[in-house]
Amino acid sequence: MSPPKSDKPSVATYADHEVISPPHKLRRTLSNVTASTADDDPVERAERALALLAGEFATWMEEEGERLDKARNAVKAAGFTAATREALFFAAHDIRGDAETLGYPGLTIPAESLCRLLEHTRDMSRIPLSLVDQHVDAVRAIIREGNRPDAEHTVAVLTRRLRDVTDEFLAHENRDRLDELADILSPPVAPGEAAF
Image 1 (tube, helix red, strand yellow):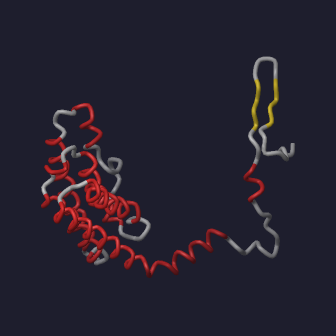
Image 2: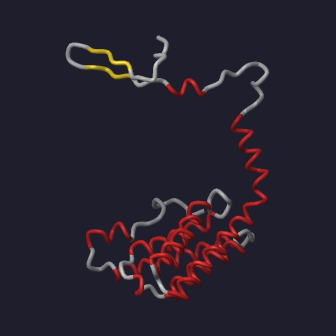
Image 3: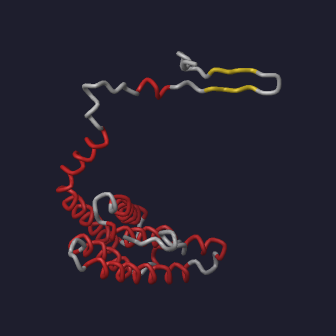
């Protein structure tokens, strides 16, 4: 049975029900592979393009680290305002999202930990700036030194300790929110999964 030509769903009515079939819009975007295009694999093409960009990844992560440092310095200069908190949160959030793709999986945990700290602390003025410094300094150190052969163990120990300190702070700050505390302190990865 060929798909309907219109953009409207088709409706087949039966005695006790109706079946609504949405239009097949995806079929219009597909192309047929011919003998002349059979060797053109779009996944392979994307992987080649990614490989060409790989040399830029370190530069991009350094720029993200500088953005995070700038956001931290704004917090130190003006305190936690809506704008400084947002800038710090989104800088950490972007690093968390980009880290794995750009080849820096060790950045995921400290960036995620900083996001949790900012997200789950109700009174920003209670966050010790030294804890913010520890997160930002860990991120910058991992960007700078994370590709060394011996760095994996050091990164794992550092990020675990940072996560523990953050959990301890968040547990204390949210001690009156017992119904939410388990979610706040839940691990960032499934048990048994490696952070790398």
